[in-house]
Length: 170
Image 1 (cartoon, rainbow, N blue to C red):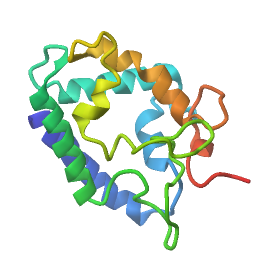
Image 2: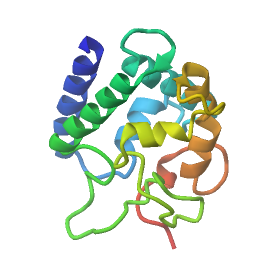
Image 3: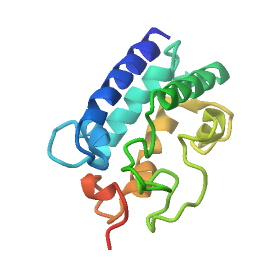
Image 4: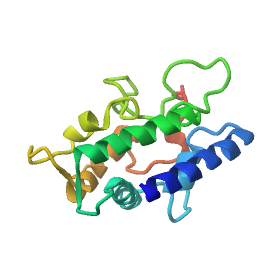
């Protein structure tokens, strides 16, 4: 729980700073996920960050996410919402609808289902349970990285850049 509160505090503080900056779609994501600062997020970086996320919510460090840990994930998302964070939070005034952040979208940008940010964690994690045993392991979570990247990569270059965020470009 201590790790969760530390991360939540950092995210809330970061949200305030980001709101003071000019609007740049995906800027917060790129700052957090572009580990080598080369302007793009590769599959290697996605796998590393997803491993870090898993570890953050795996309270007892057993390499498995339990029902109680899913609740912790939902509580974390609720804290982010209350802090004005989450998909579309930097939406310019007057802009409505999905921001094109790729969450819950296929490559074509069409909404196919409720975004992962809005779905209960237990429901979201079911799709990662590769062997159907009701338990999501570190390996199952991290192995979902390629699909996670593919869903957000608008131009199919296997790299997330600022061009993969914001409204679709004509």
